[in-house]
Length: 246
Image (cartoon, rainbow, N blue to C red; front, side, top):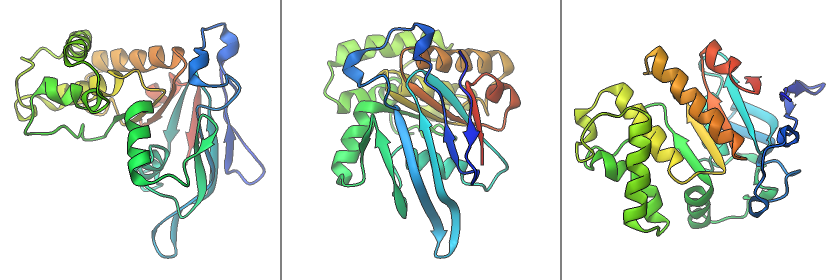
C-alpha cells in the first residue's frame, strides 16, 4: 500500500498512512507500530522577528515510509529538515520522536538522541576535511561507544556498496563532490538510524548513482525507519511514498 499526503482545511497538516500493513517486519524494540516515527505539531519558525517561514506546520512520518519535501527555493525546506533533526528549536510547537516530545530536552540530551536515532545527509556533505574518509564515516558510531573494529568493517562494506573507490585513508579534499555525497550517505546509514534525513542527496550524483542512492534510502525505510528527503528532483519525489510541498 502506498502512503499519501492530505492537507487539512488550512492546507498545513499532512498525515501519512502507516506502511506496516505491507507485511514487513517491525521491531517492537523501536516502539509502537501505530505511533509515528517522527511528528511535527504546529511548528512555527522565524528567520528574523516577523518573518515566518513555517506557521503552524504539522506532519506525521510513520515507520516504513519515505517522504519527499518539495517546493521552490526559499520556502524553508532545509530549515524544516534541521528542525525535524533537532538541530534548531522552533519558536513554538513540538517535535515528537516515537511519540515523545523533545521540547523539554537539554541540548546534551538532544545530541545523544540525534546520535542514537538519527542519520543525516547534508546538502554539502559536511565532511570533516581534517579527517580521513573512513574516520568521517565512523565518527558518529564511535561517539556512541561501539567497537572500532566492527564499525570499520561495516563502514568499508557501505563504501564498497556505493562505489566509493578511493583509499579509506584519503582526505575528503581529495575526492569528487559525488564521492563526498556518497561518503556522507555511508555515514548516515552506518548506525541504521530510525530517522534518516537527507537534503538533496542526489544533487551532485550522476543518474546511475542517483538510482542507487534512492534505492538504498527506500531499502532503509523498509526496515521500519522514517526517511525524509528534501529534493527538487521529480524523479526522486516520484520514488517516495508521499510528497509534501512547501
